[in-house]
Amino acid sequence: MINLGLESSVVEWIIEYPEVQCVLDSLGVDQSCQGKSLEYVCQQIGLDPHFVLKQLQTVIDEDSTVNE
Image (cartoon, rainbow, N blue to C red):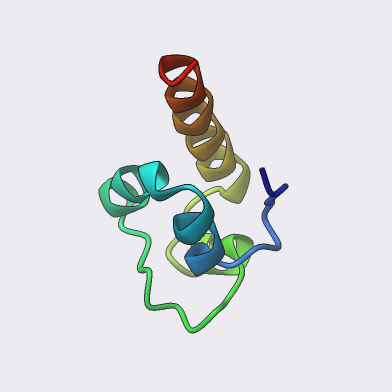
């Protein structure tokens, strides 16, 4: 498992954790962000980066629980 954070790109998140794509889509986060960080992309569309990060971590945690 790779440790991703706000400085990681949206594309890195999707590659490492495909299950987060539904969250990003529902929040309107564009995956064609040319490698820009999750934090930057969130700020550009008016989302709180920490809120988005928590949403992504929740989906990842739920997915890992189901796969145990």
